[in-house]
Image (cartoon, rainbow, N blue to C red; front, side, top):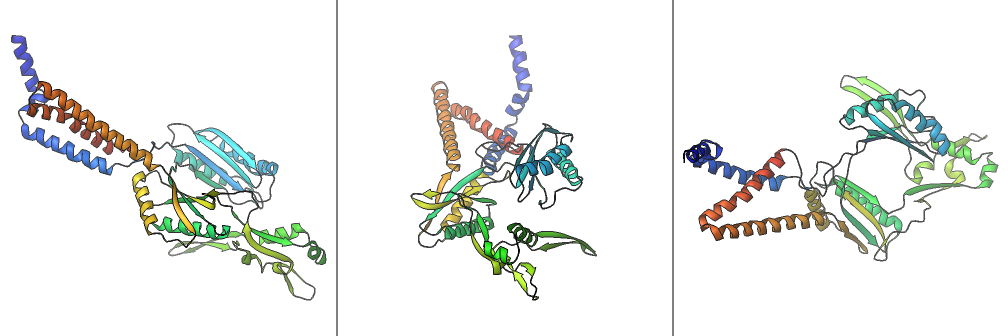
Length: 391
């Protein structure tokens, strides 16, 4: 009896006993858990799967006209030798292909990827005579996960160029829409500018196809021109001469003729805008199609991006003969799982309440079972404050 009395006093003097004698504090804590939990539910960032950082860095160097062997000797091997000793780099792999060299670095765990990225940029910048002549500047980026949300399909019985132009227009419009930041086009052939010179014209003006290619390449480049210091700051100078359509190449001077006139590219070549010669056929419901993929950044909410896309689809206007449909919507999976979780929670609470009601009176069964959702709401509040997502 004495032991039981001591145990009762110990319980009354503990945390539970304190709340028993302080009803206002207990009620305030309950309201705080309920309000904070509901706020967390509606504010928590949603995603289908947890975001996993790949912890990789890629160094890409375009090398137009180079063979895989030239790319290996001039780019990938030199980059490998420069970065392989950097602290934090676990593994280095490279791919040398025609016109392009790519070196991929895997960063070890518990190492700041941004610091490794800065070290890689410094190491590549310190390479002598790099990149090789005719190669473009290296592109050094840290790989970031960009899971796609919705895939749209643009289809219609229209010319390929029309479909491509409308896909690009929709891409620009969606990027300007609030809530959408990552849009890419898939399934269409890339643009190509063809310059066709006849053999008779080459012989007439004592030219070779290599001569014409070098002249075109030299006349279509964006070249840094230095920096001008001013009171407002440094001003970067850049000569932008790169051509993007066939008309930009027509007036390129090939050479001067003996009579003093200028021989231009349009005088000896047929210049046309078109698509690369690729056996790519993309159809949807039997009609030519192009896919538009909308992704989200690491910090964006999955359901918010989906709602922004739905709002855009309701407002977009397309010409007759072209349709824009949803091909795949990954948010449906998340919505189904959220509904399943909600149904299970309600069913579980109802079963617990009914079981308690068999042994306790109504009031006591209600307040006892109410501790389950309050505890879950308090846990969700902690999860939200810790920066986690609902996935």
